[in-house]
Amino acid sequence: MTATMPSPVTLEGEAVRLEPLSEAHVPDLFLAGGGDDEVWRWLPAITPRTEMELAAIVTQLVHDRRHVPFAVILKATGRAVGWTSYIDTQGFDESIEIGWTWYGRAVWRSEVNTACKVLLLDHAFGELGLNRVQLKTDILNLRSQAAIRRLGGVQEGVLRRHRRRPDGSWRDTAYFSILDDEWPAHRSRLCSFAVR
Image 1 (cartoon, rainbow, N blue to C red):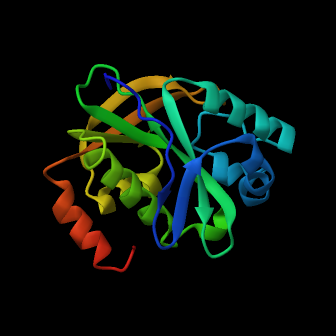
Image 2: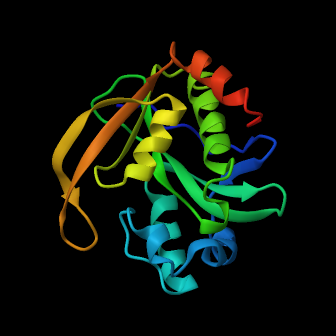
Image 3: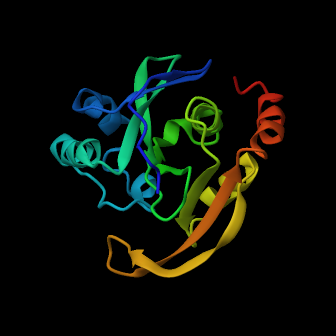
């Protein structure tokens, strides 16, 4: 278990800024992905159809002590285009999870996801001094699995019938991790593509 969840901070790179998620981000976030079933397809919540529904999800996430959520701000526009979170990893020492991540379609296949993950991984292994970062996704979400592998994530296994999806079906979850001593080589490879 993460001994102490990290305090909310602002992390900044060239393309994105990660800042503590708040209800002030809801209008931008709703424009980025509200009502879009494809954006919310793999997430643990039903697609929000109104700003009020999205605000309720944000409030719940912000007040959940197992999460440290960040709004993803695209620096070119100054607008929030999604969110991501550090999550407690019960049962693992000096470890944290990066997850509950989504981005609006306008930034899919851009540098945004990699830029966010570099900031979060640098902070986890650097300032926080952690040993392992976990990432997980629905076994059916092949796009997410490919993105995790591009970051350097090593698949550890599949937890069968891990939890129910919002539609009530069972989700098998693919688990990945990156270790602190693996990260420098992955970071060097990723940053050679001018991510930061």
